[in-house]
Image (tube, rainbow, N blue to C red):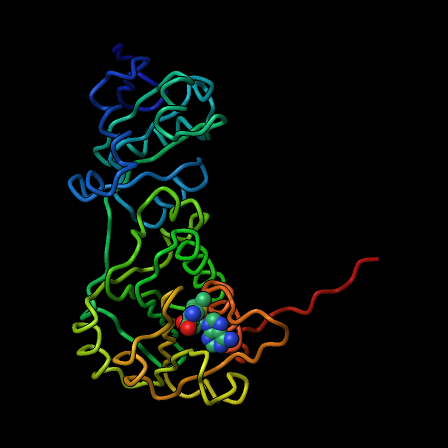
Length: 285
Ligand code: SAM
């Protein structure tokens, strides 16, 4: 392993060997066990890493491809990493492919400390929308929900029960960077129900047997907590019973339900309809 001074005010370690211990540690982040042990996760792409730093996430290691040497934006991120006490690695294509498990990897990868919001620190004011996901299993669904929460201007997500890992590579990819913008809390069902008891706004559950059409509800008063059920089983009785309303999205056709992330998107845009001052799209043609 060579070391050199970068244009950035710090040292860059040049790594070409897959046996390098730093590389091994990053590769291990593909497994939840090691993510938990290291309390870390990986995010790919220069823009994502810049956004994460801007939002105050703690970077541990910046990895970039040799091709990034001399690139002003990469050098700047490298300097910020060193200033934050992180390590910078310049690696060969082979190492980047191994770390990302992709044939055409991004030029930049960042390793960050994980961050969860504690339930007790959630403040829900008028106009705020939070989403609770019951035992979400699919990383693509979770990532898409987090991205949608970001896009619609909702406040954050609470993962209830045994869920997929929000910091897995698949989930982080599916968030398209929103993992850094959306606070994530997690709780057992019991802890969530205790916290829900102190939630002063409307708790709106979604259920295939919901008695209320989701379009008939006034979401404009106070904060809203939207509760979504597990992909296979829907909301269990204990969570359904804790909702003020159980809402249904009417469907046509033969599908028995909507995909979880799609249903969450439909609900969130309805809840935020009044609040979103969207500019009308003008057809240019
Ligand atoms: N077989 C499951 C069931 O019986 O509930 C289907 C679950 S569905 C794939 C996942 C979640 O998306 C549901 O628990 C609910 O929160 C929401 N969902 C999907 N389609 C919905 C609809 N038409 N109305 C209300 N919620 C819906």
